[in-house]
Amino acid sequence: MLDEKLEPIYADVLRRNPGEDEFHQAVREVLDSLGAVIAKHPIYAEGALIERLCEPERQIIFRVPWVDDQNRVQINRGFRVQFNSALGPYKGGIRFHPSVLLGTIKFLGFEQTFKNALTGMPIGGGKGGSDFDPKGRSENEIMRFCQSFMTELGRHIGEHTDVPAGDIGVGQRELGYMFGQYKRITNRYESGVLTGKGLNWGGSRVRTEATGYGAVYFVDCMLRTRGQSFDGKRVVVSGAGNVAIYTMQKVASLGGRIIACSDSEGYIVEENGIDLELLKEVKERRRGRVSDYAKLRGSGVIFKPNGRVWDVPADIAMPSATQNELTGQDARTLVKNGVIAVGEGANMPCTPEAVRAFLDAKVLFGPGKAANAGGVATSALEMQQNASRDSWSFETTEKRLSEIMHGIHDRCAQTADEYGAPGNYVLGANIAGFMRVAEAVRALGVI
Ligand code: NDP
Ligand code: 2IT
Image (cartoon, rainbow, N blue to C red):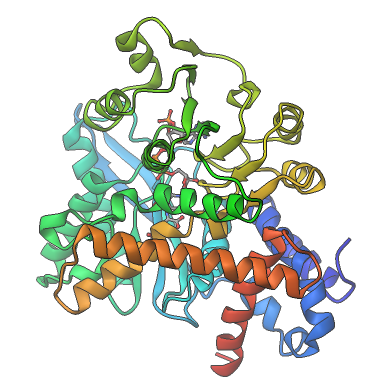
């Protein structure tokens, strides 16, 4: 039930953003946590403050024309939603996936605003992307697409304005082509305009690993509140991309056993633990599928093209692929099989019904805007290094990341306690993120 002051705000979001289900879902989830805040601090219900947080400052949609290897002209749609810049330049990734619509980017930009606030760093919230499908495209096609995308995006971004990074379908290769095109257009070596860059062209150590490592630190903090750890636990991760791979790597280093992971074509189960070096070889260097891993690995691993990775019994689940990939039914299966902790590496991977099932069963549940904030936090560290023309060691950067994740965990836990819901990290993350961004929005006046 929504607070009666919040109901008309949500009704307005539905009316003004028709058909954007994911955006509605993300807004609803935050508003569900805010009733307690406005009861305690009525000032936040004034000045259309919450309405302003639900309305992006700027939404850019553009055509991306490019020529494929058969000399055919292709047209995609590009987006950048500059959601909120009260705390700093817009900051958030770029997603290339055929499912991308404006509502997808709006949900991600909205989440990003609160996530970035939660890190305590000076970054606003934004997100971008395209419905371009990189699968099966040649290296040259990817380059031409990225160049065309940046030819338009370039006029809207800058180190003090808006700083994109990677997300699904966008990694260091794509960022390289985009940075190259931006540099060419502007004739400036403006390192701070993008993060997730390569190490010898302005990137930060640990950025590649940061989201996965950070998610594991967050879950580790939650486990410790119950005297538990990753050691000896069975862990199931979904996805096999950037976030999933470095989640698995950190879990393994803490003594956990990775039993299963997936991609959009199916999942693999290996009771003795997945061989991460081989998986990285297949996914990162060969750009292959988890089914290719199964073929190369031979006996001991099963590839399942159908079914749900969440049917594999696990102590800890880390959904790290995409939104709404873990349903209420999946959550009930995990609970039945004895799951003790769930950390969202992806953005909004658990449906509202799934989140409720975990909270009801008192499973430790780390919501994405807290658990996966290590990626963007390390992006902010990359911006710091770029601004000071410095480059930190792996150890220094990882220590900063670990401190940031501990800080986020403690802020969420304390806020949940303060609002009478100990252990509810969803409430804690939403309220703590909201308070920081709302304070700044109020201070800056009606702009
Ligand atoms: P990648 O592109 O590296 O990997 C994505 C993985 O998820 C792939 O294994 C992909 O499978 C799978 N996947 C993607 N879309 C779908 C889908 N619709 N159905 C089933 N499987 C799917 O992306 P990232 O690892 O960077 O991102 C994963 C998640 O983490 C996203 O939600 C992203 O927003 C979030 N995130 C990423 C951060 C980062 O720093 N990269 C930071 C914080 C959150 P396939 O290859 O078959 O498509
Ligand atoms: O969802 C996310 O936080 C990201 N994709 C990372 C954003 C960033 O700017 O590093």
